[in-house]
Image (tube, rainbow, N blue to C red; front, top):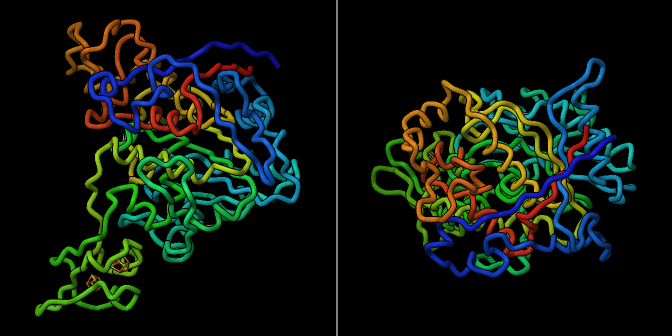
Length: 448
Ligand code: SF4
Ligand code: SF4
């Protein structure tokens, strides 16, 4: 096995350069500052393997495969090189947090990747299960039965992965644990799916792609947003309460029967309304409405959602061993929550693994931004219309010095910002560093 290394650094965002926000203005989030990786702890106070004082190591293998060597073999080798076996898996329940993909989407990770992780966990003595929490929005993953149907339909069966699917927050998304957020700036507790919190070891297996609200979807999003119960997701999205679309409501009163707070009332036309004074934002009513009449307003800005999501990720990871793997293939512009996927915006890159989810995400961001744009995609189309094509900056970070040498933009531009101009992925990395979730400074170790 051979290794090559190179370093990466996080850089100041345009927001922090122009506008110091308390949560993101700490010394830890300053540009170019080398960070100490998270001092994680395992069960009974054991140290999280990989925690230390050096820049976090991120291990990488590319997509090239010699005849007779599967990419799955390379993935297993990568996990071992990254030190996954240093976790004590003996008789441990091991949550492998994954996104099963909304039916119709074809960009989600193949079940084969999950099997490779589960097989390695079993060889190391652990008891793996695949897990995700129910969604807030209308779709085919908003209760446990639909969610499991979707997982099986997309190939995540015990026959193909060698382990079971457990929907973390139960039948209707209300089976949650309220977990303290150590050092939380915006939130003090997080509502996490119970099965995820019951696990002894947590592994995130992430499909790295663009995201229409958070800029990119990687480890932090899979852990933070993905592990939140329905109520948790509402808090991350808008700190809010659901609403009823009267044009869809048929007055069946099912939602009111499931509301423990008596927060749902009916007008003379038998249309439901939610009293936000009484509503606690549990989100149960959303899943019970068969007419898709109840939803939550998606009012949070990219920064707001990113920051809350990071705090949820901290709650999930603190106090137990955790390990993270990201597959950078079929980098679609949007989340796998969509029932479709637009064409990949860059060529496939490879697989990354680390004990540090922040370093992992930053390494994936840098790799994507360094990759060539595929013509004829949403990124290719937009790049053709960008001022940068005429020799000007198109990255959205106007005002900083030395644009041409900006490593976060790998010289010229930021693919994520071009695809979703209203998003700011840097707020994820900066707040994660400030909270001690990990480090945006990393050493990349390439495994052949
Ligand atoms: S369950 Fe849906 S359709 Fe029935 S009353 Fe409630 S909001 Fe209206
Ligand atoms: S979110 Fe929960 S508390 Fe609020 S109306 Fe719906 S069921 Fe009732």
